[in-house]
Figure 1 (cartoon, rainbow, N blue to C red):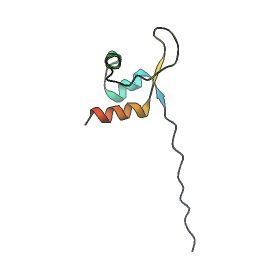
Figure 2 (cartoon, one colour):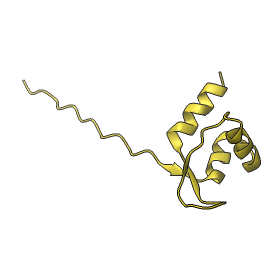
Figure 3 (spheres, rainbow, N blue to C red):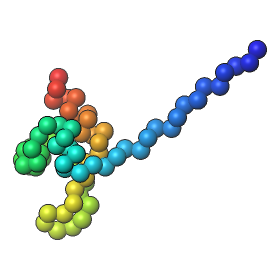
Figure 4 (cartoon, rainbow, N blue to C red):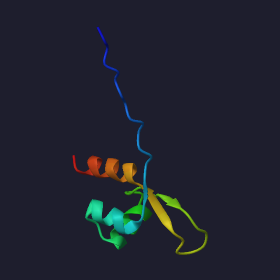
Length: 72
């Protein structure tokens, strides 16, 4: 008897996405994302550059989790 080997693919790395992609996923406007973020109602993401108006990215899985929570 031969046992079939079970293949399990490694998990894909979490993608860091830009605000436009966040808006596509959530249906929110850019201004609403930042307003909710300022009120503590939305994930803050990570700032990738210093200074005012620096690049910010969000973890795609974190956004999907947030969306699942607010959709309940």
